[in-house]
Every structure is written in structure tokens, then in C-alpha cells.
Length: 243
Image (cartoon, rainbow, N blue to C red; front, side):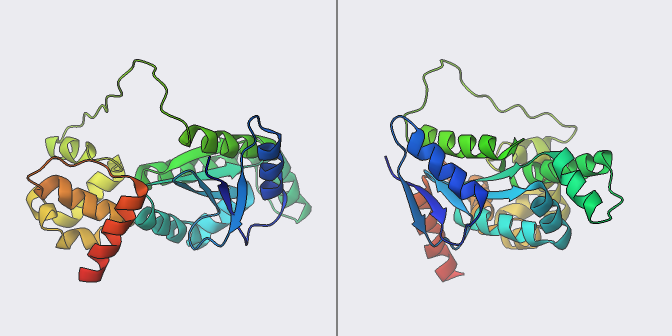
């Protein structure tokens, strides 16, 4: 099994909890420290950014979160966000600093932000109520990614149904959510214009990987499949050289 990679800049309770969890797993999950340009952890081929509730809300307000997600989208086929912590404990910390925040206000901002992450970026989101739960999820994710897919006998079918057939068509592309599909049509005006690619550069929060995928789906005469992370990064790097 390949090691679960932890960024060398990651400090504090979560990386330590992950290391303990991986060491106590059977079989033991190997862990390695490595300098990561993007993300905090690499579980198999999935890049993961992990934040406490306070860090998540602050980074969302100052815009840093959206830049981090853009970078993950541009460099990884699959990426995830883990937000951990107890809302009550976070509220008590705020109250101790004189804040007038309420539980309801924090819950609304937290859930609204997580919903935006999923809708705009097609990002995997996991909300962990505690430190140990976050560490458990990341170790379990790494184990699962390194095992063959389960044979559950079911076939996933993506259901799309809107009042606009153009939206339905764009929504079938992996990584495209409702907001992103609407942004594509708002920027390009039509699917035909989106196929040329130039107008896609003006779509907010659309990374290079997703933009190239949309162009491939709309213009390629051959079957289009979602590639593995390694081949996708190599292809993206080559395209970037030619842009």
C-alpha cells in the first residue's frame, strides 16, 4: 500500500491523530511526510484540505478557501474538503473573545459554505464532529482508495432534470454542478460557444482540468473517459505549455 502523505507544514492535533490511527490500523497504514504544493494530505490519488470550523469560516470570508479549491481542481482529478470540530465548542471560544455570534448563525454559515463548495467545485465534502472522527475518515479513505472497488451490484446513474435541456446536457459532465452549469451558459451563451473553449476562461472558479474536460466532451469525436490522476496531470501539463 502506498503511504498516506501528510504535508510537512501540517502541525497540530489532526496530523498526530492521523498518524496514531494509521499506526493502530490492521494492517498498518504507512504514513509519509512530504512537502505538498497543494492540499494538506494525499489519500491514494485524492488531494485533501482539512480545516477546523473556525479556519473554514475565516478562509471562506477572506477568499483563501476558493483559491485553495481552484488549485486542487487544477491539479487533481479528485479532491476533498474535511471540516472538523464541534459547533458548541467553537461558539464558546468565540464568546470568550467577546463575539456576539450565535449557534444558528454559525450553523447557517457553515452549511451554506459547504453547499457552495459542493455545487461550485464538485468537491468531496466530509463534516466530522470531532478530531478523532476526522482522523478515522482520512485513514479509511486512504485504505479504500488503495483497494479494488466493492462489488455491490449497483450501477450509479446520474440523474439530471431541469427546465433547460442545455443545462441537463452540461450537468452530465463529471465535476459540473448546477451553479457551474449555469455559470457556463451565462458566460458563453450557448453550448456551441462553450465548445470553442475561449469563453470558458471567463467562467468563475472553473479550473484548467474541468475546463479541458468540458472542451473534450463537447468537441472530441472519440469516447471521452475520466483519466487516472497521473495521466491527467501529464496531459494538463502538456496543454498548459501550449496555451
